[in-house]
Length: 322
Image 1: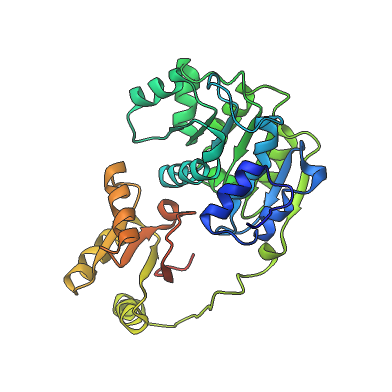
Image 2: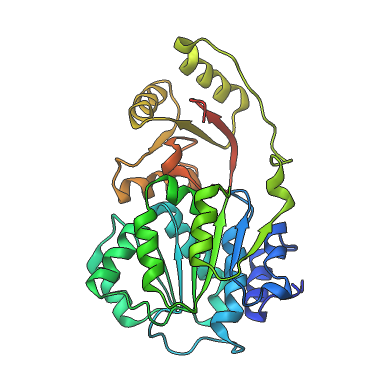
């Protein structure tokens, strides 16, 4: 069995069960002994294994030397993500990672039934994963008691600020105990993120992995020049040329997503849409269709698809310049 140095034993077993043979650079970086109880500001690319990284970083703080969690009461850790899909994906990742510790994980995301979430919080949870607006609602209504939090994680922090969640994030961080750990993960660290870190982190250690200093080396990048009115035909030709198992087409607007989805379906593609105007069940259905092979092409807005994990994704097309 592979041994992962610095990883809590139960999580190491979960990694082995999941098929891990080695850790990614960001996962190795957060396990440095000097970071064990520190606040950290991590810059790493999307897809670099950040969820597993912060799960491993949190484990010693939350378990405090124990092999398993005791009965769930007030939440010990909170992870905040910018979108519903990403928050639910983070929850799924943490569930398998902490499976052998007996962890109870609740989610609080917009578009889901708030009463069910409140009942889950009342039953007790060791960790909570959610989106900024819904988490703030629960805190304001008294259904989420933040006084027991030992750690708060902001995942895709730059994206949350870009989406206008600064007020919600500041409210959440102000509601958490002052002596908590705060871990921020961000693809980029602009001035706004640095300012947030300075205000809410204590002597934060900056972690920058080598992978985020350049483009992903395992991805081939191509730029195609086409006339504006030939764009959609060009995308159709690219999809047919590569015949990828899964393809993701990014569009700038919801209107473009709707138009392309309709046109591509008429051209015989098994296609689904992913945008903010869809209900949670519709978005979940689209992602599941991509994962189980019922759909091969997903037309999405950048915001809706940020950080989404599609295991068989082989082709990404930007219909509009990012």
